[in-house]
Image (cartoon, rainbow, N blue to C red; front, side, top):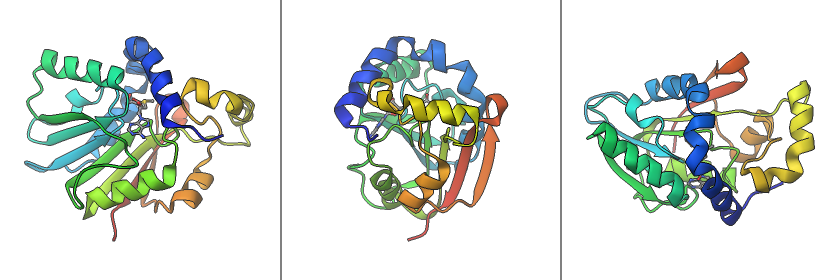
Length: 208
Ligand SMILES: C[S@@+](CC[C@H](N)C(=O)[O-])C[C@H]1O[C@@H](n2cnc3c(N)ncnc32)[C@H](O)[C@@H]1O
């Protein structure tokens, strides 16, 4: 079941107000590890794709310059509020932009990170291709996501939930094998995170 931009925007318009309450602390261990894997050198430019309500923004060191994009204005509203409240001077921009069609020039960023987004975007192949285009050669692309495991009980439940993907705003049944086959994402490092190690961080060095 593929998603489309309109249904994603509709779902996250619904979630925005309560997102931090339900998806905040419980998914923070993964966010923290993923952020630590980005380029942390002085002045490095990091792009966060699908930045949502900006829960990860306070986790970046102050000497790293962060740009966040998202297609949900409602989610971005909360990210902008957080930047103001926490006085995060290193957040350069929070923009409404489609991850599959970014307006940044080629080779703009030293690292790119997308947390809990790979199973949300309508076309994972275009999402990975765009990240590779705007990331400098040799830069790290870091994905954090849950992938279905059809052999596990959760995987079987995910399969059953697949018809409501449009409503919940993510693909419940995408496996890691399907994702890598579809996108060509080359995994250099794989780390299990969050509750029961059910989420995965994938790291790739950008080659082009
Ligand atoms: C599950 S939330 C994750 C938010 C945040 N990364 C976090 O750690 O909580 C997925 C986010 O991806 C955004 N998103 C989905 N498709 C997108 C696209 N094509 N381009 C940009 N953002 C997108 C959604 O609007 C939503 O804010």
